[in-house]
Image (cartoon, rainbow, N blue to C red; front, side, top):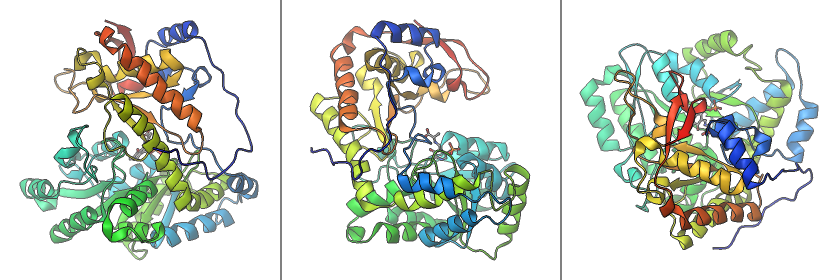
Length: 459
Ligand code: F0G
């Protein structure tokens, strides 16, 4: 398929350094085969995450200069609130410093010990904040999501039959929150349909359970709805977003993704009269700072207010998803398996299919990530058993549903030539994949979220 050209041109450049293969082999060894322990400047193409790694526009940089640094009631705060109210049609918009800060402020207001939260799939930090609030997190994605080769639309959807079953099993009174993650990051940036959001909302309404959206990649999700849900083919993105959010009562957002900033987050509350607003303000003042800045500088608020609109621009979204489709089509041509159809913010390569001989406890996703770095200086990460970790009680290594290597593409940063380098590197590795039959073992690990810090060695 054809590459959709960038709807922008480049005004500021950031030079890249390309190490030799020998140097890269030395660097990854020194980093104990953990890509999080590499220096950023030693990575030629950095696909570790699409979070906070985006390129801001000239309008956003101009906004940085205009940011109002008043402690309380800065004009940049009012501009951000107005943008949030306009796009989401929610009364109350609270800035926070990033997504997990919003989770920390909001989740304890819904969840406590003995309760449960149910999601199509929790991201690591949302799961962590459910647990920190004393509750337990349950994933409830449709079964199709677990088969990377199965091309179905809206693979990020909630399994609504299972949802109702889980609610009845635990008792509706014990379910503190239902969380819809759009797009579904952990399943591969897979979208959720409006139909599924409506059905989930209906169940929440029936059982009187609050319905919450984890909105990190809401704009990419809206684009998929417009493209693939017939009712919305001719509906503007902004109207689709309003429809998505109209079914929930609250949202948290990591603005480091679709709002195209390097730092920031939001909490949204539909009903501005609710007691919840006062409680959110109180938590925010304790954890994040006064509620008109929420852990951000005035310049960050300003850049975020502008980025919210740039992130929902239809030409931008077409180009953005187009990059994923182009990379995926090159992998299709080469017979390389990935979570398909391709999702919104990256390509999740099926490392289990690439290295069938490597068992989960030798971490195929991590093997491919290391090979990509050695091959072309590309930094990615494992989304598989290495990331999942051990059973907290038995300390046994858990086996993940997937063994993915995630190529998360930053927004407005890399060109078609860079995307071709990614595809070429994967193809080169695939050609010698049958010679790679062993993986890695962990030589040291911290007790929680080990994948960020652990040390590994070849088996
Ligand atoms: N929710 C989702 C769906 C996310 O993907 C993330 C972050 C968060 C919440 C937390 O936001 O980082 O601003 O505190 N995901 C990043 C990633 C880190 O690489 O996928 P945060």
